Image 1 (cartoon, rainbow, N blue to C red):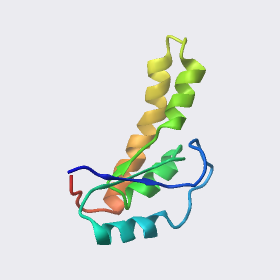
Image 2 (image 1 turned 180 degrees about the vertical axis):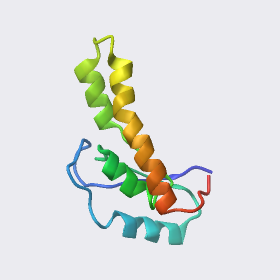
Image 3 (image 1 turned 60 degrees about the vertical axis):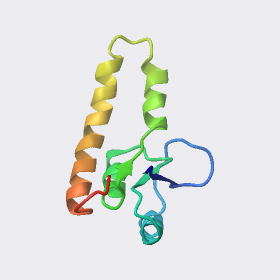
Image 4 (image 1 turned 45 degrees about the vertical axis):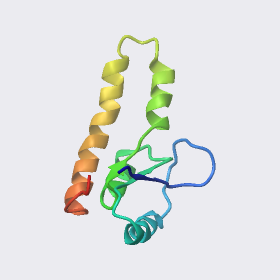
Amino acid sequence: EGFIYYVSQEGVTGERETLSQTIGEHVAIIREETDLPVAVGFGISTAAQAGQVASFADAVVVGSAIVRRIGKFGQDEELPRRIQEFVEPLVRAVKAGRRNGLKSVSW
């Protein structure tokens, strides 16, 4: 049981403008060695990135981008709405990426 968490970038966690083009290749290599689901995170911060990763990973982890917004709007009573507005495009992109990539997930 469990899953593999693939760290998509070297360095410190946080939002990135671009992701490495080799992530999909590395996930494919991992899949050759294990049947565990593969989650990819570390630097994923946009809907486009989330959709790209969803096309080959079982899970997409978006952390710092959400935490940054909580830090920015933490005292704002509109925080839940602001987070929802950020997350909804991510969800749509992941669903689209899933349709265009993986056909089944081994969870």
